[in-house]
Structure formats: structure tokens, C-alpha cells
View 1 (cartoon, rainbow, N blue to C red):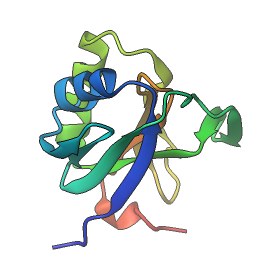
View 2 (spheres, rainbow, N blue to C red):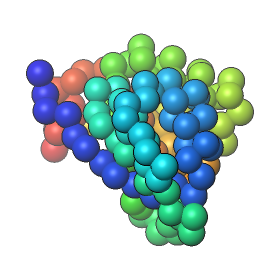
View 3 (cartoon, one colour):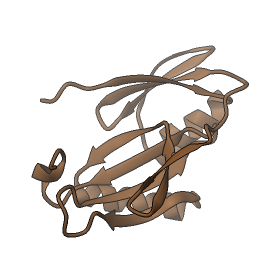
View 4 (tube, rainbow, N blue to C red):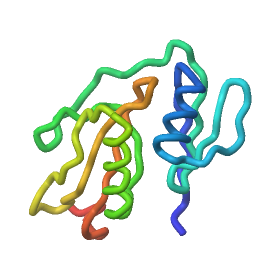
Length: 138
């Protein structure tokens, strides 16, 4: 089994984070306290820490014709799980920063990707590969 990663990040509202990560994304909740919540993001531990001043970062970098937000985090999913998440996010009215699509078509690293932000403005990317060998292809 791959090693799960751990990421702690700021949110301006724990109730909104709970609704987004626990509700829309379907992340089971772990431990929590007055100022933080653990979530299981597809087998990885993410921790939303309360920072009332938290907001979106404004930096982007061009990637395959899109302005990719920096920083961002997410998970590489199986293609069926990626499609299901894209449909669930669209049905929930999530505004995509970068709509679900396939980039690098016909090139090494061809991948399905989508970007959206949580209620605190943290950018998330979820991607999938038709061929998992393309994850680190050059």
C-alpha cells in the first residue's frame, strides 16, 4: 500500500469545511477539536485548521492552456472515481476553476483533470490516468 500523505491547511469556517469535505467530497471525518478537523481524503489525512483570515492565493501558472492555481492539492483517482467526483461536484453546483477535461492528449502524462476551490478558497485538483504508468511519464 502506498504511504498516505498528511496535509494541514487553513480554512476560515470549520462548519463550511465540514460541509464541503465531509458532505460534498464524502471524506469521512476523523478527530476534531474546537479549531481543527481531520478528514480522510481518499485514504490520506488532511486537517482543516481554523484561520478566520484564510483566503484564496492568487498565483497561477500556465499549464496546457489553463491558469493552474498555486498552491493546490488533491488526489490521483481511478478514472471511474474521477468521473463520479466530477459528476457529484457539478450536481452540487461547484464552480470549476478548470472544468473537467483531458489534458496533454496523445502525450506522455495524458490525464483527466479538474480544479475547484473549497469555501475558504483553497484550490484542489483531482486527476486520473487511463494508463497509471503515465503518472510520472516524461
